[in-house]
Image (cartoon, rainbow, N blue to C red):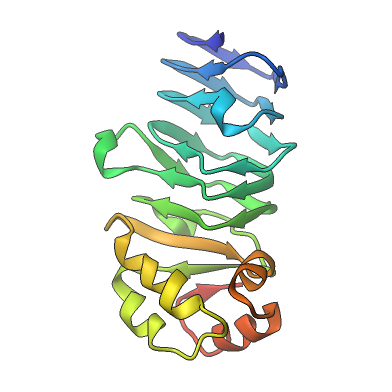
Length: 199
């Protein structure tokens, strides 16, 4: 195991690329003005009780189903592909996690949720990614729309199971279309009728 903990690291590039090691970032780790390059899968990565301040976080391979729980992210820029990631404060993390003033405009997000944060401080990716705001509160009215493929009964209905603190969810129209038996243009036609969506 390679662990970084109980220190502040400034102006460094950390490359996580070992094929055999587990990387553990935390506890009590602060990275400031650093670049974190992730080349390992989720199973080889643990990040907890860590603060990223004005960092660049770049995934060189798609990072799947990673929960940035008990992680503080402030003023960071994200690059690469993130699928099924969760950012922000989980109800169970007792205020240890947060995200603000971060830039995802160069990232490709799919099925990625933002919890317990002010999403207005974030720069979200544009089309073919799209972001639905307040998905838990709006899922019934969203499901009632004429979505193409099986998006309504499967994806939108799933919003009801999200933690109540979920403030936004971002999807890739390209990936969603392929999984749901439709096209990105058909998805966009529905989005154009909605308020509370960014694309």
